[in-house]
Image (cartoon, rainbow, N blue to C red; front, side):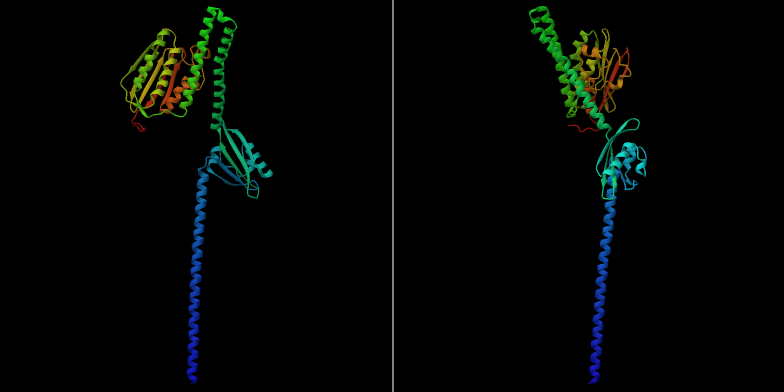
Length: 387
């Protein structure tokens, strides 16, 4: 009996030990599983952080704006690649080395005052304009400086201001003349047949000039939105029509007007806008050619392109003025341009039409010996979807 009891005790002890071992194994397995899960989560988090850092780095590197971060002590913490393009050198290691000085002052004021500080600076040769924003970040006194190039924006703003001023002046001149003439007629000149005729002719000239200016301004405004290139246009046919319409003006000015073409391929574009281009070039050539001179218009085919050349034997253009002749309202000879009825917008229209059609325009001129304008436009099979 005692032996049986001892055997049962031994069995119970062994069974208990087995249970404990199994529990320990299960616990160890659970712990290992938990450890594996934790390790996996940590690795995933690490990969996610690395991915976020990589994405953040790519974004900062691809920005047009230069980004520069200084800590509270004025030491550089971070700078992206664009900053070197704006400042022309590697980013300085300290605020004290930051140039131009206006940027340095902006960073320091932002750090001291804890507010956003903005500054516009002029730098480099040729001159560039930079707009900088310095702002505190976090609570440790760090300052972030963001720099962007606003040179083109300032240039366009200056062009806009000049255009408004020039347009106002050009419109004001004929309006003032019309008003003065009308007042003269009202004050009694209308009772003098000779004077009345002279003043009414002046009214007609000023009204025509005002109408041309308004028409050219409307054309420019429309062309700035682009040209409809949904048709295939025969440039030689457009040139022939323009030359025929201007032949009377050429005869009146005692200028010989000729046209030469050699059968050119179609080009994708707007018949109306290309007519404006040819018409303005021919008008200019006639107006600036002395009696007895000549104007030659040529339309030629080239590999993948068609060219229009308008040459005259006129007064020519001084070399100093050549770079500016396509600007709105720019005139080489103010008095002659107005005397011939010019608005100062013809060549600006030519440039816009040419650019809208993917072409190029060039000019060669010699003072006193004439000028040659050449426009080259791509044909239908060059990078253009055609009907």
